[in-house]
Image (cartoon, rainbow, N blue to C red; front, side, top):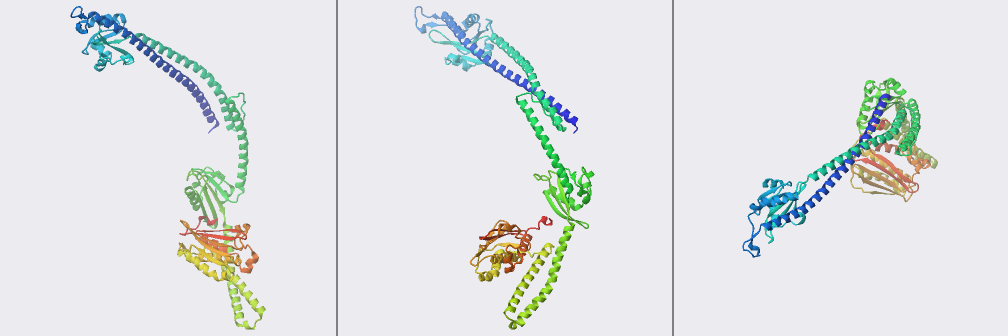
Length: 628
């Protein structure tokens, strides 16, 4: 992406950021003002309705008392002079309903509805004193027979007389005579025109206050936005310069959070300048190392395009610097190398030994990030190992030839020694007998060394075969112990085995017998009279582990890493005395590894040693890394 595109994007981002801040501040202010105004409006409305409802209760009570006074004026005694309640009579409600409602509605300014004792609306007047149909007034006030019946029976007390109709209230009062007899129900409702106007004025006032708040907050937000975004614009300009390689510092003129941002940016620019310098230096070193390495190295990205190569890759694989950016399938790599790359893309890593004509290569490919298969590029390293393999083959052939050539003279010498010791034994003196014994011992040692050299030669050339089959590891261990028991008894060393129950496994029984025979023989050689050699078997889900422990002289820690190397002997004087060649442990390790197992040792000088042989219950295939 060009610097101009980056500049335009950053500029548009800064402008949109300024707009977002302005809109956010104005929106927050407007929302807060609107919430406060609406809350105040509904609070004031509730308070006004509460006041009007209480005033309606008082006015309706006074109007109802006046109606009861008019009712008293309409009562006539049946017998003049008698004051009994039963002596008083009242005309039918229909005869005085209009007069009663008319005289109450006009002076009180209330809507009045008179409902007779039978629950039927008889007369109604609005707050202006004009007659309206009683049934329409009954429906408009939201009354029902049950509510009227409760009011008539006197069940409504105090503020319960106020019946809510929408957000307006209706007051219900029973019409009683002096004797306490109910002659219907009076319904009252106050005109709320004044309340409506007050609420309208309140709404207009709140809307004006909200609008003024938005205007004021808009102006304040504009000033605040400019104050905030100006330092950000300076930081943006400095970031653009930083991206182009100019580590410009921002002048710090403020002590607030934006000043802290500027100081942090200056610190980042300083550190970035330092780290970029180090990265460039490391890059130069890496390029020098890649150019100096004897291996051909190249890397690809996720899409298989070549991203890096060195000079050896040009000489070995024909991949030039100009091929960077091309797909690796287009540069003509050998098929086996491409298979190695494809295998690494699938499995994460791959190692192959490749033959291309008269050349032999060792190829290693791996994903540069293995968190998810196929999620990154591949790095490939190819080494020319033609000379190394030729040298190994020459060395193997030399050892094999020498071993074979030594067999014939050794056989002749052995025959001659046997002939002398058998035919002229009675004619030889003690010194000659001792010389023959030494000669036989050394011949045996040399023949053993030749056989071991032949075995190692076969292993190195992959001509050493295993005859794998079902076997019982416990039986192999018992045979090994029986083979060395006579020697152990001669030196006063006790042998024991733990957990000798059957342990079936798949292996070459003769080769594994050779391994344990060698370990037991070494344990006896490096133990003193009275020491113990103990064998135990540990069974896991997929492996059998055999521990061969002794209480002998032990092995120094500095000798353990080289213990399994060829011809390595810890105590050379003792090894010569006991006939050691330094090849037994190397052969044992090779045999165990060919079975897919592992051999290790733990030891302390003066306390003894423990050799652990781990064998799979089912043989594993040869490791793909053997070519390394």
